[in-house]
Structures are given as C-alpha cells and as structure tokens.
Amino acid sequence: KGYKYYFDTVELYFSVVEYKHIEDSLTKTYRDIVANIHLLTTISNTGVKYFKHLNPELSVYLVRNGVDLDMFKPSDISKNDEGQKVVGLIGNLNSNHEYRGLLNAARELKNIRFVIVGKVHGRAELLDKDTKNNLDELFLLPNVEYYEWVTVTDLPSLISTFDAGLITYKTIKHDPDNLLNTGDSLKKYQYLACNVPVISSDCQDVDTELQDGVFTFYEEKELKTVIEEVVYNEKKLNYRALVKNYDWDLIIKKILGHVGQA
Image (tube, rainbow, N blue to C red; front, side):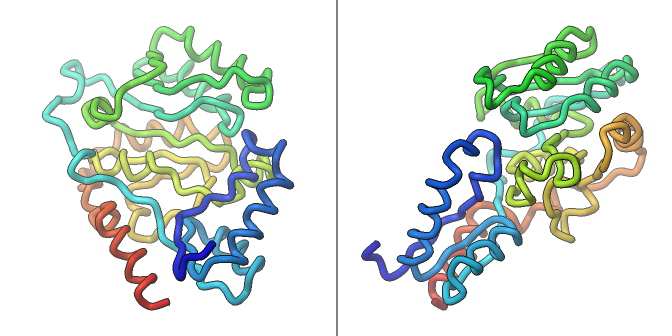
C-alpha cells in the first residue's frame, strides 16, 4: 500500500498442500493485494487469469521463473566413467509429488543410479501415509542414493553428473487440489542450464522454446519408459542454450520493462 507501483512474482500458494489449512486467509490476502497495487507479475497463465478475475482493471503480466546462468552451468566433472546412467531428483519431498512411478522405475531399471536430494516433510498434512511408504521403499533400493541436503553452490556440480533431471509434481488429472498449473519449477531451468534434459509430469506449462529439453509423462506407469528413452538417447542437444533468455538479469529487466509501461 502507498506505492505507485508494486510488483512481485506470486504463486497461488493455497493450491498446494502446505497451505490448504489457511486457504481463506490467503484468498483474503490476495484480494487485498490486488485492490491496492498497480501492477503484478505471476509465473503462470493460470495465475494471470486468477488475478485478472480478482481485479479486471489490474495490469497483470506473465513472467516466468529464471536461473542464474553464471552459477548453474555444466561442471568439468565427467559423467560416470563406467557408463552408468544417472537420474536425479532435487527438491522438498512431500505429498505434492507422486513417487509410485519413480519407485517402480527404480526397481526395474537396476542399471541406472537414482540420486535424490531433498528434505522429507514429516508433518501429517505434508506427508500422507502412501507418500511416506513410497519414499521409505525408494530409499532402501540399492541403486538409489539419498541426500537430505546439498548446498546451492554444490548443486551445479551434482546436476552435471545427471543424464536426466526429474520433476514429479502431481498433475491436475491425478490430484485437482495440487498446484493447478500455478507453478513454474525452478529445477527445470537449473537442470537445463547444466545441460541436462528434464523429465517432468504434466504438472505445469512449458514454454515453446523449452520443449525440446522437457520430456513429459502423463501416467506414473509411463515414467520408466520415458527415463529409458531420454537417458539412452544418442542425439546430442545443447539444452543450456534453451534457457539463454531465462537468466535472472533478463527476467528482472522484463519486470522493470512492464513497470515502465504501467
């Protein structure tokens, strides 16, 4: 309040499981925000529609997430010398994600190493029984390595060892109360910036210029096949080049450009 221009990149937090219990309060907060600002940016088309619905007179722009291309870049660390393929998953582990397909894939693809990095949320509302059981079984597999934490400065080197990076959010089809296409995973940009292809559920929109680097699965049973197709694909693409227009400096300039036009 009180500013001529106010801008932020807002995700619809009430659509994810962590915040369902305060949905009414968040909805009121969003209504207060859009009634008192002149400009807003959001990271999804769903967000644009939502905020325009709350205030049709408000200037709302789609501005995607980005990546620090100076930090996230291919490391000199080579892939596994023995030729073993590596599939990585990075991010908080909770009930917003579907792990059954990953568990089944890891069981069957014994020659592929799976690296999982992320804190397991222990509260009941964040980790239902099925999700916990799937993760517990996953961590026991001999071809799965689990790390609770890796520093952000070490992430580029770790990601560079991957042959594919995973995004496993639940989809609208499988869980209409989760994410609702309001997200824009930062990991997608970080994987690509390190020249690693992305394997993702159909949970979020993918910009046209990124589609050559994002391989989508629609059912949990499809994940194994998609992993095999991606990691054993001999076609060499420059995945990093796909995110050249998503550096944070360019994203900030885009936001400031909208501010200048408001």
